[in-house]
Length: 565
Image 1 (cartoon, rainbow, N blue to C red):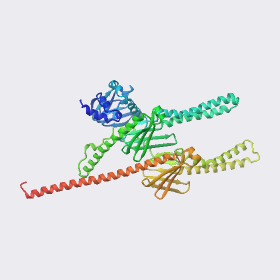
Image 2: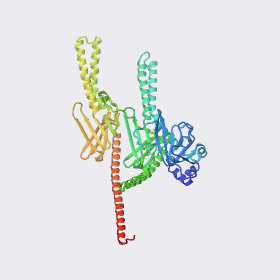
Image 3: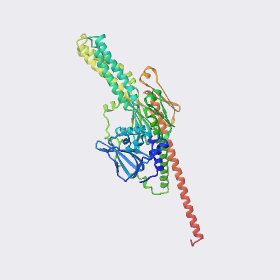
Image 4: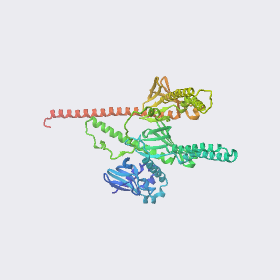
């Protein structure tokens, strides 16, 4: 099959992977691509095949899927301008996913041998390929249950490895200090004593735990670009999880910011500015490549939005005019499962202890689309330190009496009193814990909610629509607030003010509210667009019907004047 070069150049120039290439390089690269035709259901390559060729979808669709636990999952459904198989140009690994043509499909193929022949002429392409390949590999390993059915990952990356090493340096330094202190205590300062071994027994496991925690914390942060949005996922293991995102259609500009250290080590920030806020992808490698790909996907989304708008308007008019829908609007069920599908377990009512301790150490989590915040642990510790101290004292008295000390106190009466006292203290601590646990703040898709429930007492609920929020500010108060990073977020709504007290990382809570406000405003705007589209299609349909009626009336009049017609 033969395709004109200028047509191939047009398609390749729209591929985000080649966004950094200049027109001369794009034209040079177009000469290396060879068109290949596949019929519906043809396997372009299979899992375990040797990687030899990269492909660009020229016409039709290609379904990518991978296998996991003897089941097949949908990875992506690609269309014109999307790439796949790019790992063949840099690595000779076996394919770990499958590519199948959906309908009659034309792809442009680039063999790795031809790529190496032109490699020196395209110096910026290798970094883009590396970003795309690593993103594809991460997307097959990490499950993202929040992805929509028609949403697929294009770019997925973590912070630069230099950031990992900077996080690991602190626990390593602590571990070295502990070892050095142990040696000095045992050999010079306190020979023959156990203090050095105590320091080693406490300090070394603590530093190892810190080391593992820092590594897991680094691995849990992801920056993702899909065909619909840009996402920053941040998670502190067992404590905190956050997902900030911006739809591609809301982007206004994409920029890059580098520090001197970042320039030296090869990392920087990608700053995505939208009309609802700023999303900062921090300290990532290949900064310029990622920014260029985001900008390219943003431009593609605009053209897709225009095509979707045209299709929606066409469908609306067909409905108004009672025309049959086009066959292209009928969506067939996917033959493979969605990669991010969530397992549907039977819903069971949690028991008391499951309810009491479920997620009790998480200060922020998402559930059914709502973000839920709890007060900082400091508030809980401040509430239970006194009963905890009394409990320790009571246990100490019991131990001393049973060990023969305090013999002047009757043992039976003392132990009975201590048991009753400990039970009362336990109830006190449970009350404080439940009171802390029940004081939550919620950020839903359309509301801000402050919920305070006293154990065995009253419930106070205050809420406000997101669109009515006038201002948001936060503050950290006192030494402990700055040390443990908690404070109060104030939300002004009309003449009243809601406050989220003692929440962890109040600046992030403020950002969450801003982004939810942006999403809400976008939803309202989309509703207005839908309403305007409905009115416009109704006008056109009315005009069409009136025109048809007028034409029919004119034909009738002409028929009466000229019966021979």
